[in-house]
Length: 65
Image 1 (cartoon, rainbow, N blue to C red):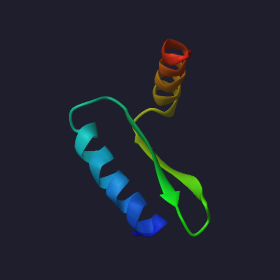
Image 2 (cartoon, helix red, strand yellow; image 1 turned 45 degrees about the vertical axis):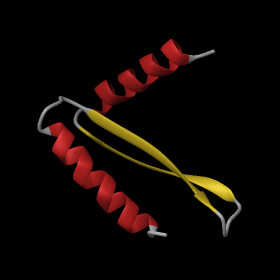
Image 3 (cartoon, one colour; image 1 turned 135 degrees about the vertical axis):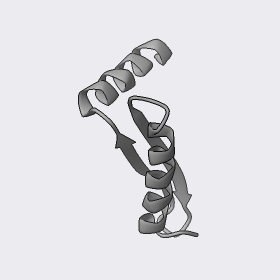
Image 4 (tube, one colour; image 1 turned 180 degrees about the vertical axis):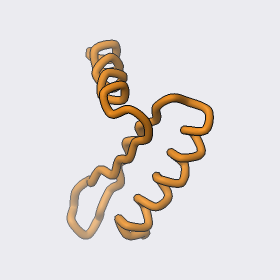
């Protein structure tokens, strides 16, 4: 399994690629950590923080069940 630093490097690389085509990018990932018996989150974003925050909040409202 990759380390958190390696995971973050992958996220940053893909976020930068997407940012070439979009104003903002926010990637949120999870991975099961069998050693810790839990899930951990790794996230990274590019572009205006307020726009990313607003997009995430809009997505949460739209997908709330």
